[in-house]
Image (cartoon, rainbow, N blue to C red; front, side):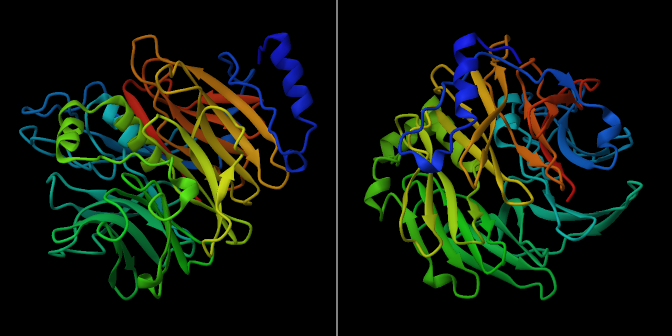
Length: 445
């Protein structure tokens, strides 16, 4: 790493300061572009399997919407054996929607909205959303053996007339059930849960109760509660007991004064039409931060860290007790825009991304936070692509042992999958020999 001397001195000093013991966080601004100094030896990664979405340069193109191309799911062990899961769809399709769990859009849409890849805990299975219809989209499950042979397990949910257009698979910790964001024709976007053994579908919450942009879902480690992320107009979360969803707790800007400044309300039908027609950067940014940033349960499910954003193009961490009490801003003096909090398997380290600001998103930092002493470590800083593309980071994922992070970044022009050591000392580009965009990495647990 190469820092200017002033930054270097500040980092050395910060590394010996426990942030718990001080009220003000004297944290450096995002440093100039830097990458880990060494290359990871690929042999040290040979025991891992990773999945990601790949949009080849030569992918099929939609006839009606040529900016949309077919996207594949790649499953790879690091000895370079790979399988490609895909399905041949007609190129006359108006849109390649949810191609085996990897949302296909234009290049920027793929990078900031690609679907999450859901490895089922305690199994060799992977669960995905798939289909070509923008309205009726189903699930697809596969079993992946250690030698990467593939068994198609079919659709565990099947056709449900009210259960339309599911997006993403959020597994419970024991793998017995998953949540997904889906569309109810009567109520709009909702979070639903599906039990694998009983084949029961439960609707947990809907937009009429809290807000009009349900974003994601995160299970407690005990699997008895779900924290659901919300966007416009009420930025925040809702904590839902799985067995009694009607008794949920709102932690949103609609009910909590501390979050009042962290909302981005679309105030009128005319404003909503403006958003649809022009897609202003502020809303694109807020949707990106809110959608990709899942709530994180910490301290034996006693607290939840989540991200809230507002119409001034800011985003910060908040923390709240799991009963809804003691809501406060988390690391309030940490400058910049944060997102994508991702907890390590041992639940001691939080990885996240941070921008200086969105109007000048010329670089993004990949950093980690020690949950116990609140020390922050900068692993890497990437520059904006020289071709003018926006600097979207589509996902962070820890290896099962917590030794490495996978992250996708387009800072070289194409979006690539990088593996970074947890201390930031080394990294490697996993997709450097693949043409096209690779996004949304997910290590097999």
